[in-house]
Length: 79
Image (cartoon, rainbow, N blue to C red; front, side, top):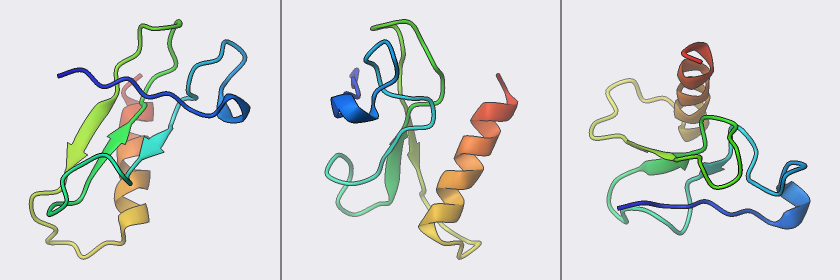
């Protein structure tokens, strides 16, 4: 399935699409597992794909914000 993330016009970049690093962790997702959708790359209009991260087991006991920061760092480092 494809998911397209759209943001409020005030939060969009100059071309009107969601900005690099946008995270959706509420409303969309599994009600029993922690997951997030992450806009990992800047893109041309209509060509970006979001990535879904799913924590199956949290053995580190990190806060949710730490998981989001780690995901952002890994995606930024691989570009």
